Length: 197
Image 1: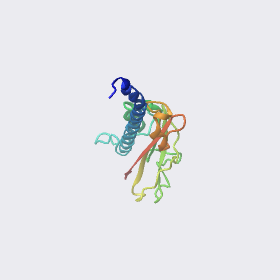
Image 2: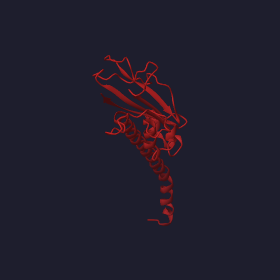
Image 3: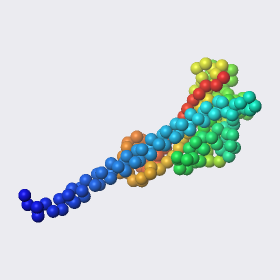
Image 4: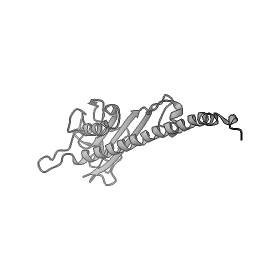
């Protein structure tokens, strides 16, 4: 065996394999961040829906929380933003739609088609530090299967984020999912529904 002729062989092998190894590692990091965003948005929407139904319900305080604005510390949108603030960057810019019978429209009702089997909660969308007007929602919540005895409460969260490591080649699994566009921006939506009497 010629030792002199094999000098630098491992250096060449490392140079050939290292880009592929880095590509795999960086894709795994971005994919892991994607799952972290998923878990946090799923938990935030569930917590917000539960809070919209129960609120701070105790024997001394039986009021249901308002949907917003996010600056009101007892609102559903404030709780949602706080749930997302630690782990997710820019969570205050997320769009949060709260569909609840607490949302009173111009007719003085918290539900549309009130008293019928197709009654649905009115919705309010909060983005940033303000909330819009009461509407039927987009997406429109479903009617509860046991309406009008029960009302379906729903919270939708739409969050836009950038992957941790930019670049098309480092976002192959995210781009394949269809949630990320060509510029690298990803839009993730989560919702939760719960019933209330």
